[in-house]
Image 1: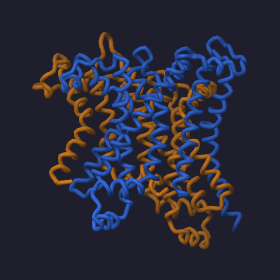
Image 2 (image 1 turned 90 degrees about the horizontal axis):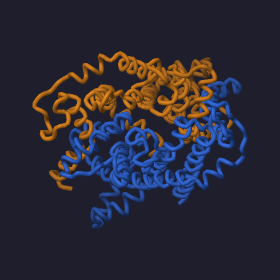
Image 3 (image 1 turned 135 degrees about the horizontal axis):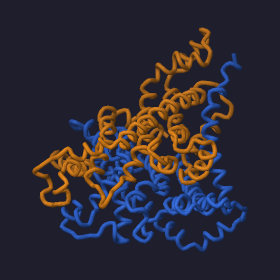
Image 4 (image 1 turned 60 degrees about the vertical axis):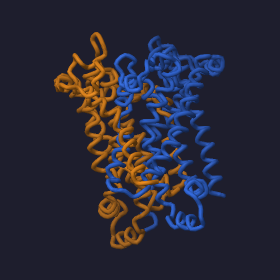
Length: 283
Length: 270
């Protein structure tokens, strides 16, 4: 009986597939990152840490790193603040709540490529609706300042719904009696939000931050389609730089080194949040 | 908050979420001559020309079919393999359970950019480049952590007694799985299916890299690489965007509750 309850055969297919298509390629990328590999010329030779040493002095890498960091910090912060406001708004009981929730999910469900094309059209400096509505004459995707912030706005529009939905679910777990009791004790709305809602929502906020920070740091498709990394590399994120090295200049060695750097950063971010989460639960 | 204020905020929220898409819809219906004229915001003439020219394009329709095929096959495969694993993790004696779950979840943090070039070399090596299988296998692997996570949580909610009773009655673990567990967890399977389908329908990085021609090209890639002879065909792009987004809008409105349940699975409880 005991032997027949063994779950090993059930987990094997999943583990094989993940090992073959996720883990093995990542290890292979590590191998490539210490090589000089140009498949079209049949060049492949071991170069030790040369790629990594080159990376330290590579101004374009640091530029991409700064862009990625700026993009991550600004967009995740905006998404959290806006998402929290939307979650509070949706937490109240009102008619047609289901429909409003579905509407909020629309940006999340739209393919990233479609969203990027939509925003590219709205940002168009000559015929774009944004300049028209605001009465401005901004060259959105042509100026370094606006292009990166434009990418941030687009991401905020697309992913705030995800943040809001998770936070809303977190709000619904908080017992209503707590609010009532606080009201009876004479607490104002702001006090209740600061002293009750936020502390109880903290674990969910951390989970949301983990998901969003990891995704934002890996950003590729949205910005790649919106700006292609331009103008003059001012919106080039680490993933875009790596992709261009890999598939436009076909330098599989150095491109992999860049990809491994994304991997390392993402790993450190997850460890950081994992510690915060464990600390929060231990409290 | 007072009721009118709350209502006004909700309206603002809906406008924020739907605005860009509605503008894309308006653009897709504008005749070419007035495509770039503003004002008026709402055109006085509408046309279906852009839709006709997009749908008359054989390659675009082929890409839609590719996308649907890849998304459907990925969903099926991910659910089959993932539910087996989730069942073992939730109900069976499995060695190193915590480690297996940890391994699966940490795989979901792997950045696609770190795996795309080795996978490209592997796929080219085994001759799968520019085939639907290259995408189906990759997407299945990348969606497995999500499937396993949601389904494990779902199976855990089914009382152990049901499983044990079936075992005592002589069901093998596998019979138990497909005769008892699967029928009982149809909502969970359905939730997972929606999320995996949306993920595969929308994915761009792997699709861009592994596909070369319309033999396997999916819609996101087709839209990103939309051919323009002289200038960017904004009307056609808008029409294509609306066409691709429409199925998703239908899914979102029909299954809003399921999607919310799937997205929040695990994130809220811990």
